Image (cartoon, helix red, strand yellow):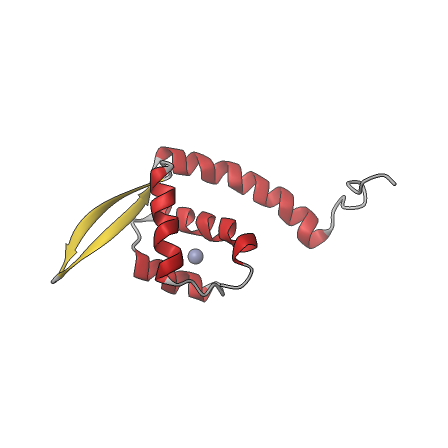
Amino acid sequence: MDHRELLSGFVRLHILLHAADAPVYGAWIIEELAHHGYRLSAGTLYPMLHALENKGYLISEEERHGRSVRRLYRATDLGREGLRVAERQARELFGELVDGHGRERHRPKS
Ligand SMILES: [Zn+2]
């Protein structure tokens, strides 16, 4: 993923958003994020999922799927709370990033 450092927060929120909606698993997330223009490898995604789980935003369980076992992730209450905060902040950022509203007001005074 290009510009990984900048975009990783978006990716984490995107994962959380879907995990708040329905249980999700790695391969599905990779495909879903590809639709949104993110090329994410398993080597990037899985550490991200583990970190989100360690921080209490996601909870996972294994589910047998035919002969393989799949790890399903869903958002916790903390995850949902984080999403609400992020939604507010995303609107705030979006306003400045896209519409430029108030950007001139927020310039450092020289
Ligand atoms: Zn999506």
